[in-house]
Length: 319
Image 1 (tube, rainbow, N blue to C red):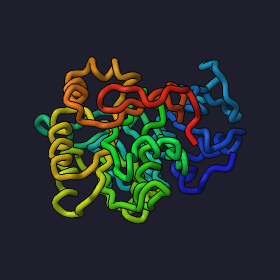
Image 2 (spheres, rainbow, N blue to C red):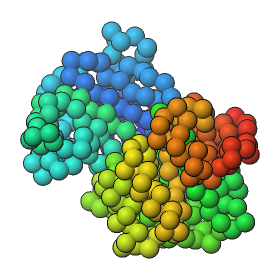
Image 3 (cartoon, helix red, strand yellow):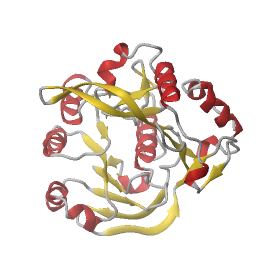
Image 4 (spheres, rainbow, N blue to C red):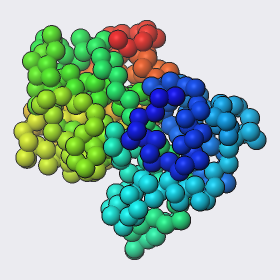
């Protein structure tokens, strides 16, 4: 397995050796999970596998290599460059972003200060989510979200691990650089969890285009208004809207004449209409395009306009 240097160097020595033996394509490796006292596990090509001492993939949990406390501590030391304190602000959000744009989710004992998380200690769980750029994966969407040279307010609806962030990332890149349908526009990205740009030390590791500005690790609602005030975007992109503050900020952005492209968890129009916040958005026709993704990553299931008219229905791979 050809693992990029910036990824393999974060693991303990034992885990590095195991990963070197794994005969899989890195481009299909989605997650690496480490839990103290539990089997080493990966998400590969949409399916879960345990990893043996010999680097083989198996469905038998009893054959999986057991992660030790020492290996977890060694890995955390490499991730934080031997300084947990230096990464305290990021860790309060429950994740870190490393070189290459890969995101590391962290769990353990939470240290509270009032009703807010102060820090995390006794880290016993890691979820390394690999960032994957699939340039061109949004090609087939562009004709549906650009109407007579005008970008439509668009909501991407997808089950977990359905590829919505990957598609959003490519939409941002193409709208920023320009396409045969549209000249390049200024795009503002509020990347609350560092998943769209995968920023490391403030610099996006993923290609978001030449006219894109990014607010990394910033709450969506606050970030949208900051971009409107300071960066004059023509399009704002956000991942996983979920509360009424997000809704109010989206409405304010639209009232400023800025287009919005967002994502949300769901599996159908009927599914999102069951959620009070999204039901209100659908009823008020806030978004002009609803793109429903299938269960398999990178599959378009349906596309609707603001009136609920189906514009597209076919389970097909994105270009």
